[in-house]
Length: 157
Image (cartoon, rainbow, N blue to C red; front, side, top):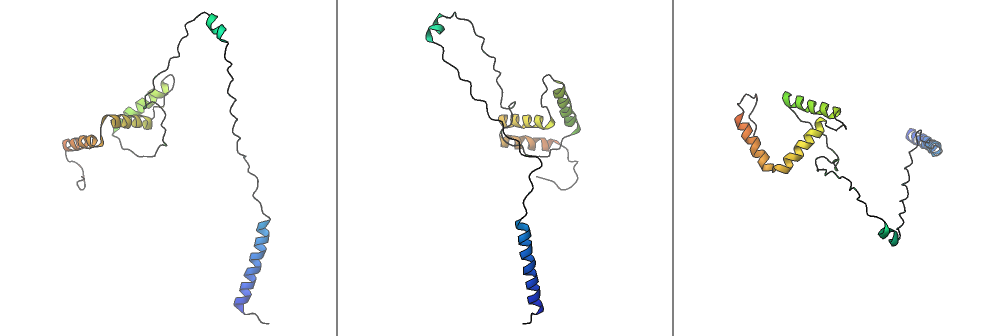
């Protein structure tokens, strides 16, 4: 029986693939170098026993100071939604002002996250609370009309 060239190549390729299958079937992934950290189990809730009613009535009444709860505005609370990367362009005076705020935030006791991004998020949130999108557009349109035309290039709308 004679084998032509194409059949010989196919037979050789099939034999090679069979060897590769046998070789790969014995391979296993190595164990991880840094195993995953186990999550700590939550502590069981403390069991509070009810005091007998007689003890509660006979105990002298003392003034209990109520804990002071500071009202946290939505602007001060941590953002719930994931943040999205965005690029903004500022003039030199606004950039220096944001840098001054960041420095004051680092020096404050306790330290405050007063990064440029945090300040811009605060400003945008306050703007969203005080103005509608149409009011913002009208304000920007009014400011654009006040600026003398010194720009190079085609006129933008």
